[in-house]
Image 1 (cartoon, rainbow, N blue to C red):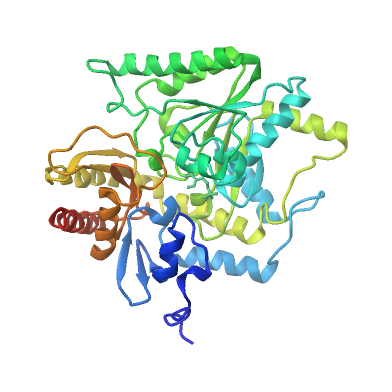
Image 2: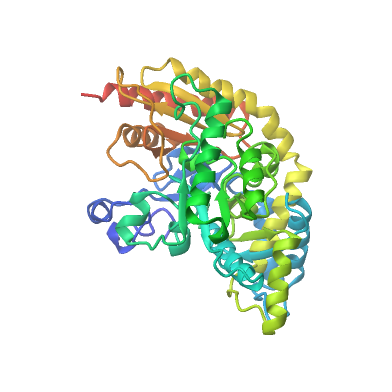
Length: 458
Ligand code: PLP
């Protein structure tokens, strides 16, 4: 059976697809992708699509990179699997940890591997509670996150989403979570409010939230440096510096979720570097292996790690781990990604292409459906509204089925460009290897989709 025909006769609802309408899967076969090359994927009928969001913000080096494939094959041949644990590991895992620790923007650098971004963030919470118990502060359990953020799909990370669509339907316990506003400058500003005053208002909201909860009960604040999935609002000037100064006053740790922003998305290796953030710990995944293999990591500061070390020594063992954490094949691919970043000067390419990207998105602002565009690094958002209804809308990471952005997403598929629909906007984060000509083609297809969406309006 050739790859195109495989699965052709299966009803779609045999497999439960994430973030899908499960009833619709019963009636309609999902779109099936069979190949990828560079920034393009190909469906079972041979139609090509520009992956304008790198699928799930992750295939940063594009599809079918021979060097990444070779790295995986070589490790598969040498030692396809050996779990890291019980004082045993493999050379590629050690080497990757060393390189990550050296590059991560945290003081010191101790690395724990897992498989997904959710798991990495989950680990961060679990380790924080552990560290605080060792430090004699078991009551410091609460984690602050921003409303409408996304840090993963496990129970503990869903509890950080601050989004009813993600939490309430599943009855997620959120007792240890505290929520503050996500900066949406300038949309979220009061009339006449300056950027500085807006920042100060958000920092004051954070201060009041900490005070109301009891500062001695708050363990950490988690945030993405810039959140593509919350609608791509770059933080207002000075936001993270003021947040960090406040957290330091209360002894609350700062965690940077670099699952999307890590590995070049913002023009530097880490979003924290681009935004001048000094986190205590970071989590990363996706771009770490360009998503060719599942792997994630948390990188912890010396100070944070010292409590884990102390606790494990008292207990005799650190009682946490997983079979696939630091899988050798994933680690080999991730090492090759780091290698490629240096050898092919990926960051140099991203920085040189960013102005072209920004110009291409801005050029869509003349379209009747487009009310604004936002850009940061090699990511962006196109804010849309029906003509005459262009009020400000703050996005949320849950998809908005049935809305205008969902229609634009569908027309995008028809035009051969895959975007991510959110409330009031679509977001974009193409593979970092995209060229100037490909950016031109992406924006041409997006305009075709915008025109079709406009034409279909009643
Ligand atoms: N954190 C952020 C910012 C994400 O966008 C995501 C996924 O999109 C995650 C964490 C969870 O990562 P994963 O889907 O690999 O579990």
